[in-house]
Image 1 (tube, rainbow, N blue to C red):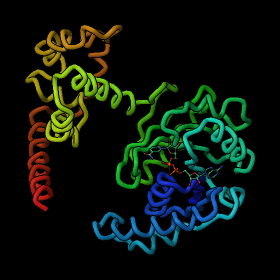
Image 2 (image 1 turned 180 degrees about the vertical axis):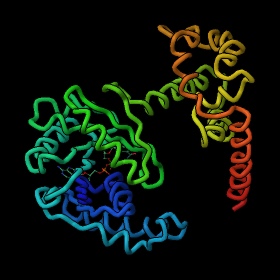
Image 3 (image 1 turned 90 degrees about the vertical axis):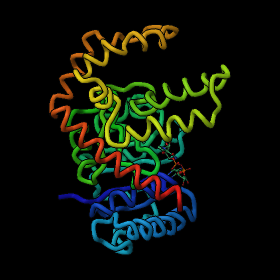
Image 4 (image 1 turned 30 degrees about the vertical axis):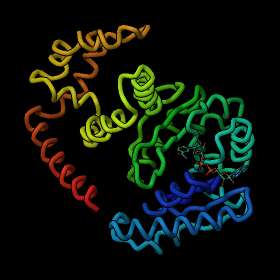
Length: 309
Ligand SMILES: NC(=O)c1ccc[n+]([C@@H]2O[C@H](COP(=O)([O-])OP(=O)(O)OC[C@H]3O[C@@H](n4cnc5c(N)ncnc54)[C@H](O)[C@@H]3O)[C@@H](O)[C@H]2O)c1
């Protein structure tokens, strides 16, 4: 099995991806166009690996063992030699990405996947017209990926199903959580969700309805706390005795009033409700509620202790 990975761009995200792949046993080649950047990256990576070892997050390995799987590459050509996957992490600038992805496509083995960490560019913008457009996609992490597992996989119009499947499997093999969009969309999934929350947060403050501190506290000590172990759909499923359909019956009218100013709002009780309900059939609601409460209790204890320290 090919376990060689190239990291192109060794800044914040490139360093963290290097740890994430190396920790899972992959051999990583690190390349950056700026002189001294790779050396600096090795220093930062060593520091992060020490901390991961201290928190027992290296599956029993020591930090030095993980760092030893990460080598410096003097050129991009050297970095991509024989790899199965390239993770591109150059600055968020379309012109830079277009040039670098084209170079990577030319230099990389034809069966390797080319993934961009871009936060907001679409695959069609940087890969359309390339010979290897079928093997290009976005693999967008949250910073830092070695501590936050979610990674969004976004295909462009030319991305092949095989590229999506291979990358999904690769991300699972390094213990990341792949989250796939079915086609490219502005903001992918996480920034669309985050954007909706930020819109409301700014609106509440601008209209003098809340202080910024209270908006932050509402997320920190409220919604974020219950979203550590489950997402918003599972949360509402457990917040009404009859699950999602019951929640929509009970509280839907209130949310209709809250969202009345938004154009083109989705009707929660339309066909989408059935898709959500179907996705939540895998557990018994009462058992799951108990499971949630046990974990929230552990989390409450942890947060209490952290606040004291
Ligand atoms: N920082 C975040 O929170 C975050 C989160 C998710 C995704 N991203 C995305 O990850 C990408 C990288 O972001 P970052 O925060 O690591 O930026 P960064 O500035 O820390 O790192 C970018 C690196 O790319 C190098 N570089 C520039 N041109 C290059 C080239 N032609 N070839 C090789 N290396 C080159 C730079 O020298 C630098 O070391 C961006 O697309 C960004 O949107 C960032």
